[in-house]
Amino acid sequence: MRVVVVGAGSVGRSIARELILRGHQVLIIDKYAEEARTRSVPDASWLLADACEISTLREARLEDCEVVVCATGDDKVNLVVSLLAKTEFGINRTVARVNNPKNEWMFDEAWGVDVAVSTPRLMTALVEEAVSVGDLVRLFQFQQGKATMVEITVPADSPNVGVAVGQLELPPECVLVGIIRDEVPIPPSPYDAIEALDELLLLATPEAEQSLGAVLTGRPADQIRTHSPGD
Image 1 (cartoon, rainbow, N blue to C red):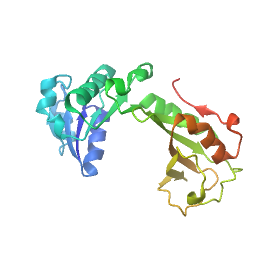
Image 2 (cartoon, rainbow, N blue to C red; image 1 turned 180 degrees about the vertical axis):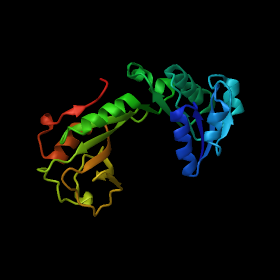
Image 3 (spheres, helix red, strand yellow; image 1 turned 60 degrees about the vertical axis):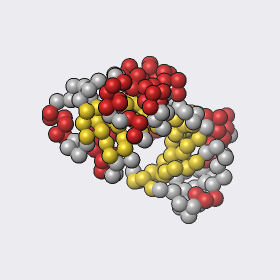
Image 4 (tube, rainbow, N blue to C red; image 1 turned 135 degrees about the vertical axis):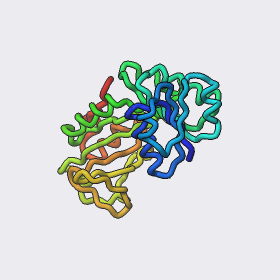
């Protein structure tokens, strides 16, 4: 897969390195990237130019890439590039970094953003997750599909402790995508049994979150708290 990463700061370069390790072809665009930064990701292609210019994106052959990642430290740049990628080049998927939580409301399909990733929100969510056994923690929202990724730590008194993943009766709008047990991520199989204090990562619609919490904890839906950091 060909991916364009806009922004050669520590975040952009880290993303580029991870993508390259996974076998993807990466082009990094940055107007001010000095030689030291380009040497730090030698397996990437580099374009030293202003990503907010249409001519730069044409030179980058944006129409030939599957994903654009806007990872600069400037929310305005991330929004402009996302919008251009969608409207001018028809990119299938855009991922944009949110630096200021106050700007998060703008990072949606109207600005061409498919997935908005807010570092402050994620860090706050992880702090809350550590002290919120039995509560839902909304990690982030997929703007285009109106779905959320949520986390819940299974309480010891949950009726689902010992139940196999394949036997979980989740709401139809919810999908279990991962289990973290003893700080180790586990891809769920139908035969894995849920254990107390497992951290479950799920995709859900906002409307299904309360029902999901009730199923996984055995508590009434109106007693399920949903943390949404930054609101």
